[in-house]
Length: 218
Image (tube, rainbow, N blue to C red; front, side, top):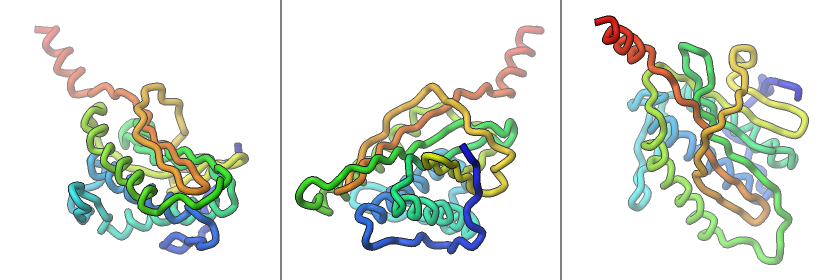
């Protein structure tokens, strides 16, 4: 699999293709889910987010321009892959800044399905999206606690390439197989099915190891 970088001429907002049904919905889900994950996992400072109420749930929008541009840049690539019908999945990866290892991968797996009859009602699609988003804070509360500094990036998979963003990750981060996982939810449009799951690693807290070692010496 070839690893390539996003186009240096990317705009900072996703290119929505109105003639490709479902692309906007998937981009919307990835953005809303990613910001919720970053908020609840403490990857970015709380002041980087603006809270927005939607019925009985909280949604989040990034206020930090650099962080927001990183997410939107990934969505540019996502939209282009959707339009070309080559997207397999997009992964929000969380990396431990000390070990430089990926400790969580939030996999948005995309499957193209040919339309069967009438278009799926918009309200039904939105209901499915918010059902997925409601699961994120519940699931993050059950994942291993994170006690270090973290950063994030995106891995975008097509059949013959892997696009890594930010570009600085290309040589610093290696995708890894994480065996523990939790299914988050499923969303489908007229022509897409997208399944979200989180894969995670259990980290050893070096500070706890030191305390345990010192207690054994006493």
